[in-house]
Image (cartoon, rainbow, N blue to C red; front, side):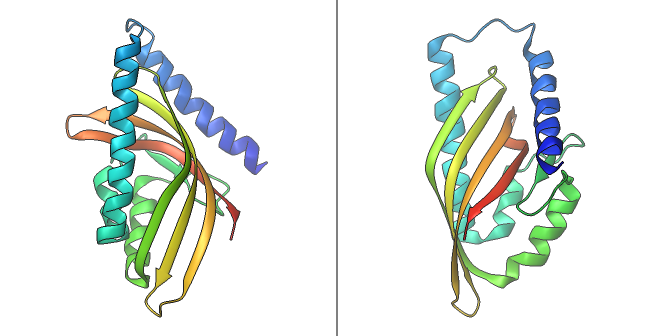
Length: 162
């Protein structure tokens, strides 16, 4: 049931993005390459900011719109921006550092304003007592280009191993 809910949530976002981009002309290879480069830069900066400033650095990268949703590890249904904000705010002080790195990353442009990505990542989380846990995660998401840059619009993160 959980997988069905996740698949439906991702499918709904993909359909919404496709409808938005349907009237746009197809991207050239150069435009696709540019979108991939921009999104990859944003995701790398996202991880660098989390390492530098902690969980609260995520807010710069989350799209605070009603359509935003995410399915964090352990959740069976999507949750809203406000719920994510509450979780991050509550959890931020527990960690001394969070070092995320991509093991794999695939970015697929849908238009000049939307792209999807899929990755496998390693997250090394060190709490205030210097206890470190390393997680292997799988993540898929939709990013949207706003005036202030690329933002995470929706997606899911799943725990692979601990």
